[in-house]
Length: 286
Image (tube, rainbow, N blue to C red):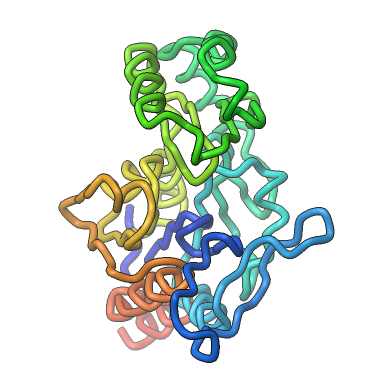
């Protein structure tokens, strides 16, 4: 049963809310560039950023809604990120393969996901073998497995043939896998492994009456379609494909300013958003 006033905000992270230096998209004159806050350090180097204003907006949002970071990153990669504001009770990693509750993966959810993948999809070993067979060493830099759930390649994007990803997707589809190109990474992900399924589970546990979402890639499309309202930035895989959803707004902003605008839109739904404290006051007034 949904609880009146509880809003769940599920947002992708990379190139949606947080941005590497290469993805910042600072096209304005230097003296007009926004001040940035580093939110991720990797191997002693700053890696991901938000604007300082976005940091304030996110802190405000966390006090008004159930904010759920929703990422394709592994748990280890996600735990490097230090988002502003209080820690989220729930987080979704590995594209829905792990539902974290106060930082710990829920074992029942993980079992359910792996069971569906085993029943409906070709094996990870088969997909990895195909990737290794068809990838060209001239542009392939790394081949990786994430959480024993899916595979991805790190490539030299400028050397990657335009048709290669489409050919891989055509091979993977009948085998129950989907393919997504994000920056320098090509993901091969089992179709049952979705952000939307994990978000629906969080909505069930929290009794959320409304779900808002944001994302930039093909792997976010199911999340946006499942939300009551969503936003996608003016850059990324969905924007390049001209993807549209019936309840998804396409923003004009690109780069780190898109992340700021997405947070502004989440908070713009403040008439829908109520904190647990506000709910208590509403019940007292009645």
